[in-house]
Length: 439
Length: 149
Ligand code: HEC
Ligand code: HEM
Ligand code: HEM
Ligand SMILES: [Fe+2]
Image 1 (tube, rainbow over the protein chains, first blue to last red):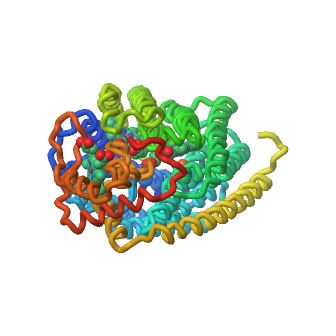
Image 2: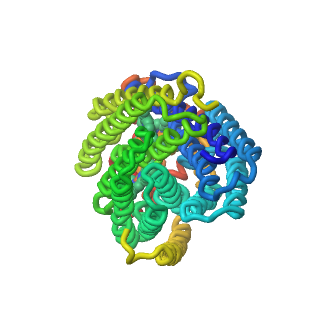
Image 3: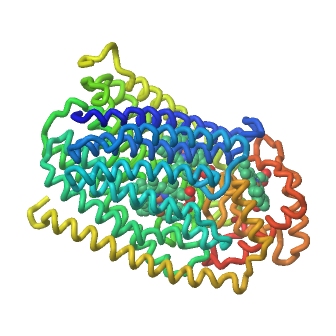
């Protein structure tokens, strides 16, 4: 770490991990309501639990992206951040807005669509936070060295903000509403967020493998090209059964099937960089998270995505537990893991220490990852049974099917406990031992 | 990566291709928006349907239910609940039964997923039912496959 202003990332990393803990805690409550529907008091119905779970997820991932950006932009641009004060202010506005939103949810204060339940004043607050952030980062990039990593990262982050604006568009026509809801949800996770992820990964590869920047940046262009060439039209895989014209079944099936390629390219990229670099970076845990990220993203987004993305398959699986299985592994593999990789890499550096608690951190990698994988399998089995009985045979209603798949929901809950334990180990591994080496 | 692809070429491919695919996407979406906007010719969105949609959003029904397969997966699909309640043959009966359904929640049955009691007024119930009925009329390429949802 060369620049003083990079230290501001620490605040974001701590905030992100705090919200991650809240996210999985509410995940457990949601999993509990699946198997013990009357276990929680009336003011915590399933919908409130779920919106806190998913919102906390999105907010901590964004907070992690902000932190990662504040960490890597000074090194990329070779200049201090435009304003550290603004970065701190932005953190607190964001964090407090998140708390206000959660408290509001508990009192029935929500409005909108899935993932976008924030009342209008919180949505406006989010836009303000985004503007503060983009201003700060853009000013830094403008005055400094321009690299491919910082350009792609900046493009991705601007895209995140621009597509969020569709959260404000709530037409009366449900079909239109749904079409543009996906402009936030799909064009985020299968578009601009992938740009952010790929640039963070490229940064980590340069730092940890020592491979030449030229090589890494070419890879980066190839990956993000494949991402957007397939992912934009891939939006069509959400336009099959929502009242939109039939041609989307062709466009969506073809282009979303191709979306697997950039995730595979990411695996090739990370492994060939590590192999080529041949350097033994001291932060082994960060390396493990980075490689794990590309692999799990390939399985979660690529394999589990492909599983249900062709229109003739999706006709039966649409909106079942199969979707939930894919949602978990994809979000975890691609976006939770890239953040955990970056935090593992950068935390010792912002604290001015050698990498510490590596073994503990790597244990947490294996425990959390196996937990999410097991959860994904449980939900996949639940989904297959559900699809068969309710969608293919059509002999049982949704509620009748639930009685048949309770065992899988118990397994999901058990795996969830494992995930939370793993996360606690990760958090412990972040606490530095003793006093600083170079204070 | 080989020397065949220079960085400048890679950059040009990225920006050029992205613009190309985004423009194609925009054109298709514009076409679909045209078609979709005409749905309301046959299935007008009355003030009551629109009010029902606002209730759907404000009560976050979608964080338990799916509607046309989107939302959460904790409760039944509602795109065709109107048909499940027999609305196609006996509209008045379906209305009455749906109102009775809302009134009877939660079931407090520890073995069933719970739906909260919303204390809707009769007018709000009419609105939410009008909204569900409107959804049931939309052509979704024969989805869901069966009446069970
Ligand atoms: C906390 C979760 C939850 C919320 C929020 C919720 N529901 Fe439900 N709903 C359920 C569950 C669970 C069932 C099935 C209950 C049963 O069969 O015992 C259900 C059943 C229904 C049914 C009957 C479906 C059928 O096929 O029999 C209708 C209609 C319905 N809900 C409408 C709504 C509307 C409209 C809203 C929003 C105002 C809403 N629900 C909010 C959980 C919820
Ligand atoms: C990291 C990238 C990805 C993430 C984070 C992600 C996440 C999600 C989530 C959360 C949903 C559920 C949305 C909802 O209804 O609430 C979803 C749906 C879906 N995803 Fe992905 N996804 C990713 C990549 C992909 C890819 C690459 C494919 C295809 C190959 C794909 C195919 C699908 C399909 C077909 C659905 C709709 C499921 C349905 O019909 O119910 N996803 N995704
Ligand atoms: C403690 C472990 C976890 C448990 C028990 C859990 C449980 C749940 C439950 C019950 C839902 C609602 C599903 C529904 O709609 O019916 C859900 C949704 C979701 N969870 Fe988790 N979760 C956990 C961890 C995670 C993690 C680690 C991630 C990603 C990093 C994640 C991402 C999501 C997403 C994207 C959704 C919305 C999509 C969907 O509804 O399937 N969850 N989770
Ligand atoms: Fe998608």
